[in-house]
Length: 195
Image (tube, rainbow, N blue to C red; front, side, top):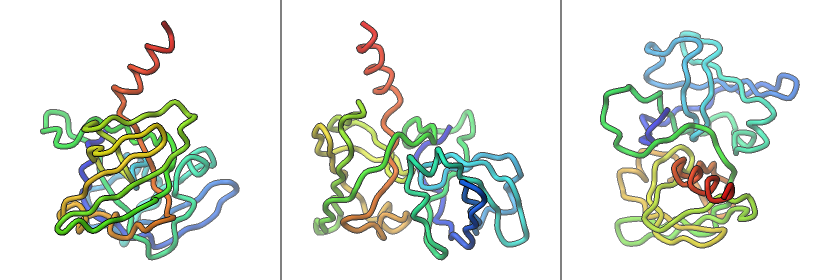
């Protein structure tokens, strides 16, 4: 489980294709605290540390993950949002994030709003996922509040701290991001479908 509060920006230092999978090498400041078999969210995608070296660690993104996320678009040198698993008993500053990306969305607009930024995204609305105004959404692993909700699109307002400390500052119109919709909302939708 995660909170959607990004710990730091890691750097992608290697990408190797292995059959249908990608082996992704990441450099970060908390490398010494990581262990093999630990879960870390990468742009909101929960991946397992499979190798650890003096300068970086490696995670594996399988075909299923690559088909549903933007990880297949990573390049060496890219910044990636990182968050380690939540510590039970700590404050939940964001919202409950599983690290299980539901789908991707395309950035349709970025507006500088005189001290904040408004990002708009469009996604495939036929999947049954939805947002609500003032509800939670995870974009590239970042816990955000929806300010404008439509059937297949939404907007979020970004404060300067989030802009400066995540890879949102690198997202431009036409780029794709990972979305994880609110887990409580997903259960509510599913219960309604069963009735």
